[in-house]
Length: 131
Length: 383
Image (tube, rainbow over all chains, first blue to last red; front, side, top):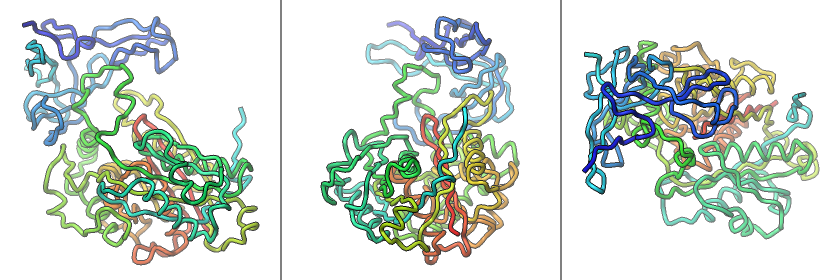
């Protein structure tokens, strides 16, 4: 059994975890998620997109607690937030607990979720209010 | 590069409209749905199928090659037929293609048809683009819009009850629409029950069923040649399609895209937002109607909720917003929805909407957004 990231291309499983984005060397646009095709701002090809570490920390712009979900993970109810990362990009991610409100400063934590079919434990990035 | 205004230089009209009721998925085939709406539109126009020179079918879910097997049952006349897919805006894009076909002079009489039957899931291509995202799977459309509701309510001090009043109005409008999937007046208590995601409850989310909508689009020459009733013809003054651009971090794409597309349509039609009497917008989720009323310039940001509350957007109010019941009550069978909006606005502008009639309606607007994201706006008017 191994521990794997649910989103291995988007995260570095360090402490604290790091979110992987990209920066366009041609127009300097910083974006998330990393893109395998090209820059939406200037049209440069993926060779001009360099990997960029983004701090898993930001401000909550919106929250919604989800009561209906058609997949086993995550179990309902769970709460999703729109988070503006300190590094610029705006992402959507699960927040731990339903106490996170608009305007809260949050940070990423790695949370174990379901095992996959091979019995590996998957970890996912969730956000919690900055301790 | 120059920009021509085809619809100004060569007027295009809606001369016939027809629907098959929007309903829960049934045993009815899409062929039956489609030809019911098409025959109804031909009858309404007072023409026969051989008068039609081309057909565009808006559909996102049927799979390839749906038009000919369906429309040849009106007579295999051999005319060009093309399926048009633009997610939720597929039926709007069928109308847009019909407008282009007629305005270009290639045809004088064209059928725009929207038809769909939902299968398991929507099969949206962006999910297969190979671009992984953190929220993959957890942010389905109702949560995407629940997040926009959260942001809107926080920014403007609007309550969940105020947002729910959009659904209260649209269910009431749909109750007098015989083609609507939901035809019940609902209490606020019913609307606020059954939470789905954030502030969005079941009755603030549109039903995705099946149905069909048809519009016959014609030129001046077509109207003259077929001796059609000019007094019932409704002109299409603008047809604008845009896709999502970059709007800056934290800017809601749906509203920003709507604002751009709406502005281009108002310019093309040579009108102001305040000139519009009747609108059908993409109210798939209740919050959207507030966002789009503001993005289209009907009122300043943050004011739509109180205007809904005070009845300004009711039938008989300042302007009628979603008089058909909108996607929330009339339903959102995907392919038909955008064409169905043109059907409703045409009915309103003709003064033929019965108990849903917004008196004195002269200028109307239809608006759809779709996954991708795309936005299609049409402006219609009668003399």
